[in-house]
Every structure is written in structure tokens, then in C-alpha cells.
Image 1 (tube, rainbow, N blue to C red):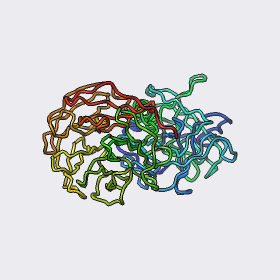
Image 2: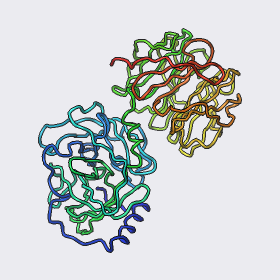
Image 3: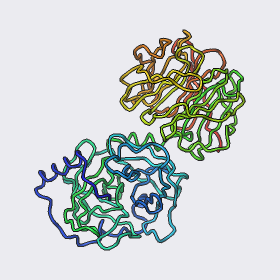
Image 4: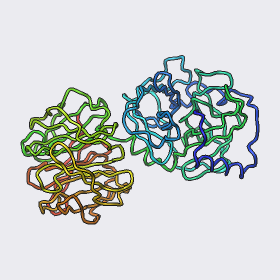
Length: 499
């Protein structure tokens, strides 16, 4: 585990623990740290994480066939900046070994981590594997908070009292001393949390039932090889209260990114997706009824590192163009050729690291596509398009911190682009456009959209009214025909493509 001063919230938890149980007991470990060697086929969902070919080692837990939960601080040189780890591909090549309690054997699987989805409120990140793991059962994430005095079992591949880099998975018992909103303070009874254990699972074991309740944060590292420290307290990062977020990420559909527009110039909206399995951009042509056909690659290069995608006519030539935001903070503009392809790329703007969701349309009526983006501060910003660049940001609306998606189009039929936003609760809100990049106040127009993971606007049936296209948790594509009044008809459903 990285040696670092505990952050304020972590220090508070440790102080609370001291107040609750008295001074932390000084104990010389009698067993290997983190505790005992784990038996074969036990806690096989635990992952050994190698960042940068030995630059850094951590532990994690498989929570879905293609997802690991671990500490965001594993992916930054400054652990105090864990909540600022950028989304997207890790800066250093990272491998995860899952299903091997003994790393010297060949059980389980080795996968590369190709995408990070971090939290901004705690030291947690969801890490996507390049390929699913089919021979290891994922951990079950608990929805119940750790209780005072409860015993948790900490698991990890970190150093022991006599090994720098052990091959065996270890576990030890820890008692819960105190909790706050995001962390839990614990004290080891049969072990300590050491370097290399960061992000490893803290488990509630009840008979045959095992639940993942937290992951390892900071630790005094008492008894760990290379330290004279004797205190065995540690701070675990809670997962129970963010179980819905973990579920949302791990059930993300086959498409990593999605946008809809008429990309082949036939008057019907097509579907563009970056596939989560291979990072290629595909287009599925719309048939004019809400169904989408066989997909084809847009370009030969992978779109690895792209985290946001929008499509509209940015250049004013009547052809749909692609705008993508990269994890490096740059926007990339790909002019469309009107025939399912693009003609090069440019960087019209940088500094988009803080923008979490975006949508594109001609919001000010100048025949050039504009962009709206929601920043980390919960404000909506308008960027007027200039053909190949964008003007400086103008605040268009506030109060968007809990919105998870935004869709643009003329949904009310007044010739001005509007915005629909989906709240984390699943509520759908309409923001009527004023024709200048600003919007009227939100009006709730629907609910039950929490299962829609990716959404976009487009006219898929060619009737001149803006529609909504969404990809559901189940992978199916839902096309909702717009009525031009802010309402929608019954969706047309297309199964996910055959990969």
C-alpha cells in the first residue's frame, strides 16, 4: 500500500476509531502479513494488478466478467490526487491476473486494463478488461454498511512480514472501529494492510456467503516488511453505498460510446458506436423505421481513449461530422464525407478534462453545429460552433450535477434546438432551447430511463421531427419517434449487433 499521509477524511476516521476503542493496540504480528495464505479456489475474484510492468502493484476485485473495482490511487503518482484520475485508458500499460491464489500457476486469466471509470468522491475506480473473464465468478458487492465491531476479512497480494513480492494471496481479520460517509476505519487482529494491497477487497464472510464491502485505502503498515511501524490500523473505502453505481458500470452495454445522425446522406439517422470490445468506430445505417442494419467500420484506426461522442454538421457543408473528446482533454473534429466515412481530423479545442457529458446541435441557428457540455461543477456550458473551431464557453444553465446524459434536437418543432437530460433517478427533463444557446427551465416529461445507458438525438424516420435513440442495459437499441411536441411514440427495438 502506498505510504502517504491520510487525507482529512481518513484521519478523521482513524481518530474516531481511537476514541471508540482506546489507543490502537501495539501488536507484533505472529503471522504472515496480510495474514494467512489463502487456500486454493478461495476468493478467486481477487486480482493482482501490475501497473507499468512493475512500476506499481495493487490488488482489486472482479465484480463483472469484464470489470474490476480497485483504488484510483493505483493509477496516479500522487495518491492524494486519487479523485482526479482521468477516465479512459491508463497512462501506463496495466495487467490484471484474476483467479490465481498462487501466481506461479496458470489458473484463471490475465487481462489488460483498457479503461478506467473513476469516482470523484472517493479513492475508487472501475477498470475495464480488454476481454471478459469467463472462468472466475465475480464478487458480490454488499449494499449493507460495515457495522461497528464487525469482523471483515482483508485480502491482498501485497508484501508480507518477510516477502517483498509474494506469489500467494493472503488474508487477515480486521475489526471495524468507525465509519464515515465514504470510509471505514479498521484494526487488524491477525494481519496488516501492506504495500501492494491497495484496492484489495475487504469482505464480509457469513457462513458460505461472501460479500465485498470495501477496498483497502491507507494503512499504518504495522509489521510489514521494510517498516518498523507496529500500528495495524487502516482505512477502508466503502463500496456499499455506491453499489448501484458499480452495477451501472459493470452492466454497461456493448457500445462504449454512441451518437446518432444521418451519416450516409440518405435522410435517415444512422447509429455510430465505439464498440466496448475492440474500440473501433462503427456505423449502423438506419432503415427509416427505427431499425438499424449491419454495421461497418467508419475508419481503420481504433478510438481508444475517446470518452465522449457527438455527431452533427459542424462545418456547415450539409454532411454530418463527428466530435469526440479524448482523455487528454482535447476535442477532435472528424469531418464526414457523407458516405459513412471521415476526411481526416483536427483539434478545435482543448481543456475539456472537466466536461462529463455533451451533446451537439445547431443551438443558435447559424447553420453550424454547436456543443453543450456539463462540467464537474454541475453547470451546463454552451460552445458556439465556428465551422472548425468553437467559441469560448458561455454558461447556459446550472443545477446539472446529477444528470447522466444529455440529448439535443428540435423536439418541440419550433425550429430551435432543445435538450433532454436524464437524471440519475431515471427522470427525463426537457430544456426548451431559446435559439441562442440558452434554455428555459427544466420540465420533467418522463421517468424510468435509468436503464438507458447511452442516448442521442436524431431523425431516424425522416419526418423532420427529432427522435431519441438509446441503448438499454440489455444491449438492445430503442428508437423513440418524436411527435414534434416534446412527446414520443412507442419505441422501435433493434437487437444488439452480432460481434
